[in-house]
Length: 125
Image 1: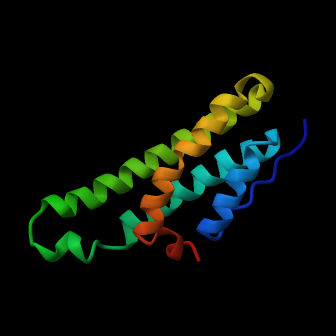
Image 2 (image 1 turned 135 degrees about the vertical axis):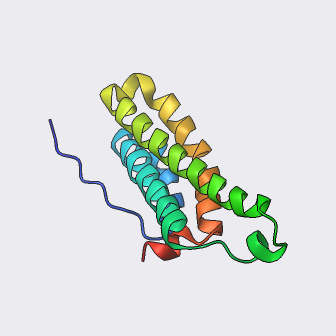
């Protein structure tokens, strides 16, 4: 079995480019799922642990936006972990599971937007 080297993406445009390429190549599909999911999970966890919410999350003084901030970050971290698991599942039989992997890649754009919007990829630099 070949070894698989997964590079962590540095910017959101690179991730989007990998996602587009992944639709046509099985190895790139697995790399996009595992690498993208790991990057989103790590960025969300780093934001939750080391960056306190600001802006509209503390503007009104209520606790609902404060808890929403952490709720979104926990949800994105969990979705990133699921994306990694789907990547490993697809790698087991890429010919039969390619469609599910492609669907997971395109659905994973939503958590990517949330993490990038909250400044997650600036934390990874």
